[in-house]
Length: 570
Figure 1: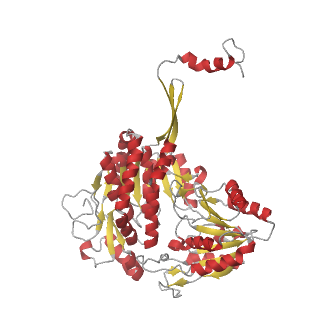
Figure 2: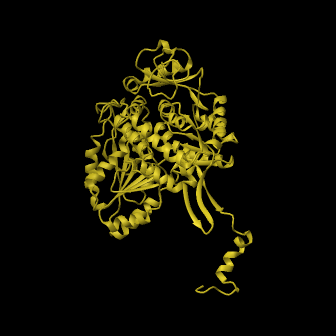
Figure 3: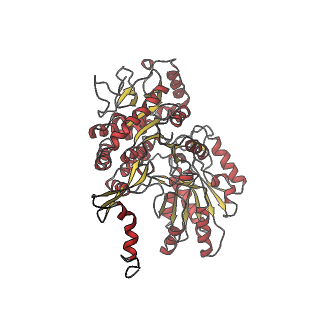
C-alpha cells in the first residue's frame, strides 16, 4: 500500500482525497520516510465524526475490531470508518530520523530565497488550492465546519506574504564595516521532531513545517487518535512542494504511533536536535527535563489558561462576543479565553450579555454552519470543576448541564452547555480550580474585582495577569487610550497580547502559539518555529586587505590617536 489512490502507479504527491487501492474504500496513508511510502501490517482506523455522534459505542467498537484484526476492511459496513493510517514500528521510526539527518546538510545548503520565500509562497498557493479538501478532512475528524475554516485560514496567515517577510527579516541581517561584510543570521538546529496535540494535529503540523524554512529537516508523529489530517496535509500539500523545489526526500517524514515509545526513541537518538512537544503543563515540564538531560532543545506548547481584561469603558457587546470564543470546540482549544477579569462597574451588564450570547453556541453535526460545540464523551471533570467553583462561593450565571445535539438537557447528552460562573473578588480567586488552571471544557469564570479607585484597579489587574503561572495569550478590552497604553506597557506575561479584538483570530506576522511560564517552560516565548528551531550566528567576511594585528589593536589606536593621546572629541 503506497498511497491514498486508486490509480495504478500514481505518485503520492497527486491531488486527491481518494480511496485505497485494495478496494477497502478507505482513505489510506502509509508512513512517509525519505520520500517513500512505507507500508505496515498494522493500521489505525478513523471513525467518521457524524457516525460517532449518532452511535459512539458502536463506532468505537468497530474501530477496535479493525485494529485488533477481528474484522477486515472488506467486511466494513459503509460510512462509519472513513480512513486508516499505517502504524509505524520502531524500525520505521528510527529510519525516519536517519533520513532526516541525511537530508539536513543538503537542504540547509539551499539558498534562503528557496527555503523560505519560494517554499512559503508555493505552500501558500497549494494550501489555497486545497482548502476545501483540507476542510473536508477536518470535518471527518470531528472539527465543526466554522472551526475547520478558521484553522485553514490560520494556516494561510502563517504562510502569507506578510508573515514570510517577517520571518525573513529575522533570519538574516547584513551590513558593511569598512572592508568587511557583516551578517547576523540564524542557522538550523538540525533534525526537528514534532509531537502535535490530539485536538488540533493538522494545524499544529503545519505550524511545525515552518521549521523547514530555517534549513532543518522534520519528523512528525501523527497522533493515533486523529492521524488522518496530519497524514493528508503532509503527504498531499507539503511533500509536493518540497519535491518541486528538489529537496532531498528525508527533509520531511511522518509516522503514526504511540507517543511514549516514539518520544523515548527521539530522546535516545544522537541524531535528533530539537523536539516540539504539545501536551499538559505537568507532563511537559517533566519532558523538558528529559530533553535537557539528553542534550535536546525542548520547544513546549502546553496549557493556556488565558486571561481577558474588560475595563469599565470597553465595548461590552464586542467583548461579550469575543468571550464566547471560550466555548468554541467545547473549550478544547488551548488558545481560547479561560478567565475574565472585569471592572466592578460593568460586571452585571457584561455577564448578562455573555449569558445571552452563550445560549447561541450550539452542538450538532460538524457539517452544520452554526455548530461550534464538539462532543465531550467523558464529562465528569467538568462537573467536578463546576462543583468546586460553586462550593467556593461562585455564582452560576448560565449553563451547567449535559445536553443533546438539539439543546435538550439530558444527563446522557454528549454535549455540555456553555457555562459561566461569577467569582466575586480578586482576593482568593485563584483558590477556585477553574481560575487556577486551564479547564479544557466550556466553563468560563468571570472574576468581578472589588470596588477601588481606577488607579488602584489598573495596577491590581496588571499584577493579576502577570502573576498567572500560565502565559499563552492575553486580551484587553478598554476605550481610554491611556488605559490601553498602561496595560500594553506593563503586561509582560504571555506570547501574545491583543487589544479590542478577537482572542483567537489570526493576524499576519503575529504568533499563533507559544508563551511563558507553564505554557512554554523555562525557555518559553512566542513560538515561531522557524526561529525557535534555529540559532544566531555572526559572520564577518573580509575582502582580504586587513592585517590581523591591525584588526586586533587598530580600533584602540584609532580611538586614542596615532601618538597615544585621546583623539579629538574623545
